[in-house]
Length: 313
Image: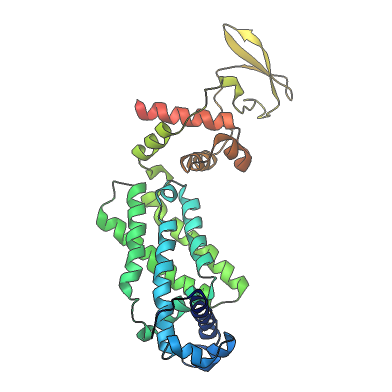
């Protein structure tokens, strides 16, 4: 920039010029765009534009610096320790969605497309910027599975980032329908690629123990308060039916058969259980998990307490 804006009005004008320039570059392309196009669209005199920027390349480089700053904020949001504790599918989905939302804005979008189609005009952004995101993802993978070597984590993260970037470029340059299809396939591709290495079962025990110790777990409820199904007809219409040998008995209102309180609930698939535990590790309360998933909070409490007992033993 020729000079830095000091007054509020000048700062607002510069930001308006930059925002407008991103839209013009995106619509017309960098080569076809002119400073007059930018000034006209920004509703400012071209002379005012030249007070801050000598040419359109200087405007582009200012956008570039702003993109680096905003991109690093995006990286902090994507690669937080809380994100690492989510179930793999949800972790990938949130990560991709954060990227897509970021690149919905004209300035990041034009920076991304130009980098892969006309990288010679860049001054501050190079492959090292991409490698910052690779490093962030590699750290996340290490948190999910500490048994992986640093080289393996970097390799996995590099493949995910580079392939994700290539497909995201296709998505950003496509119509809305095809774009959404590509984004969905990015999630599926990365999830399938990472599952054998950092799937939900690879979450480190120490992370879970720390979460369990820091969370105020509600008082354990009796076994019978769990979501139960009749072992004969699988109905959930269960009611208490007295005691026998000091054990609670139940009766099914559908088939009329009785069974004892030694029942162990197996009505939920493993993926549902892991999703609930992932939400819990991410900081969500038991009642909130019940509202989101439909799984009784008592069931989630008992899952959590059972895991804690297993880890201690």
